[in-house]
Length: 233
Image (cartoon, rainbow, N blue to C red; front, side, top):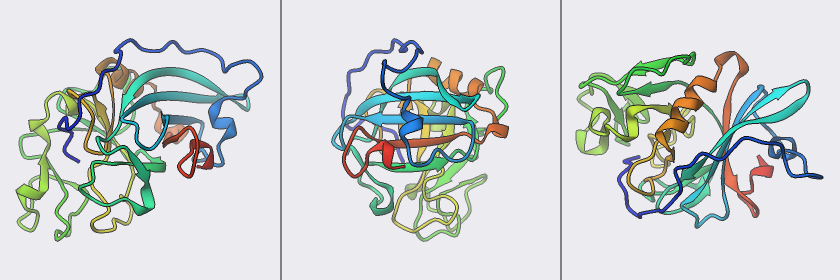
């Protein structure tokens, strides 16, 4: 999704300090129906489906408990959030659900400590969003003839947002046409996203340093309550 700023959002760039869950309440991952089966988890939480801001928190599971490793302010789509299975392309909405994180990429060199697969963005790198292409919702390098430039993202042109990014596995394994393509966790732009989740640059670097492929990290995106509540995933 093109991460241009459709709606300006005012958020603090101060990272929230990691700490224990409030007394008497278990950590969020322990209240979720599914966390992906691994020992690392990102939660992207918004107050409601109309929200364009919220919080991303990263967690480690150790000795049978989920412990908060870090947290940062987040931005969501200018159209808010919507259940992933019913999302439509072009609505500027962030899909909710539990997703894997296939790989990372970036215009800049991977931060020291990055162990997840990391693809460097080149001038010939594109993300195909053309519903008529065989490469729909895939990184292509170079762009094939059946993937129209007007229907795709030329990754290198987003120098701020795609300095560092993680692919979110929404509609990725078996893409459904017109559901959406190019949903990432990436660096903040000037405002709300077009469907991705974004965090401040320093937080994105910290997340890449934190993520370990052997621990099967996933991301859960949702709200505090209702049909898209994080605890349902």
